[in-house]
Length: 243
Image (cartoon, rainbow, N blue to C red; front, side, top):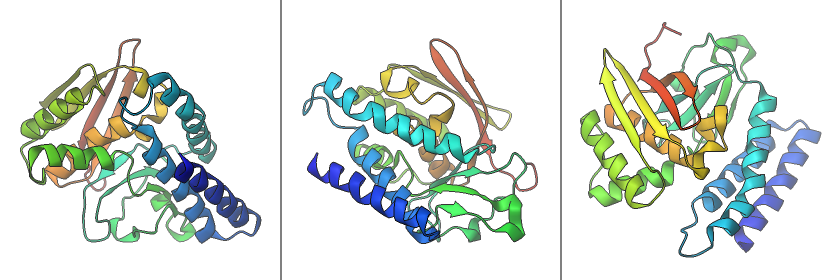
């Protein structure tokens, strides 16, 4: 708790200093600090803290994070990146515009904002380390091996089993057809608060990070639908020139 509070205070100071002095590196560092705080606090085991207290602690954090992304006005569809030379743990890239170009060579471990005016189609925000990374590591820990290049259905079984055993999801369905992956996630309190900013949910993002890593290719969320009971996603392997 003390570590989390210190992280927020320090990140706020760094972010404010970066904005007021137009120092991009400080802005990046400040926002990265908030992501680390969310990762540290979102998935506290229920045996350690009552869920109502856990929810009270994180409600404002989630809302704040959603406001940041709402104000960034990002119009592109989220892309989940597998680990590769530039990003050891992969990442989540949200393009600024609907028509964009994914330039993997532009990313580094220190990247957050990609704001190259000479390549406006490549602009966007990189979430790194990606939300959901801790859960992905848990999937692999339970399995006893990496899911890299694992068959999609096998990887999904690992994901489903792990999330169910941790009581993080009530139910989840996957169907792979004609090069598309349909994922239906039944709602609970942990994920429904994120709404269209679903990529900020560590639980949801862990699923697509795992699928991306198992296929060893970037995975783009082509369509997102929400009903009272579930969230439904249509994902596909990212193909250069199609977006």
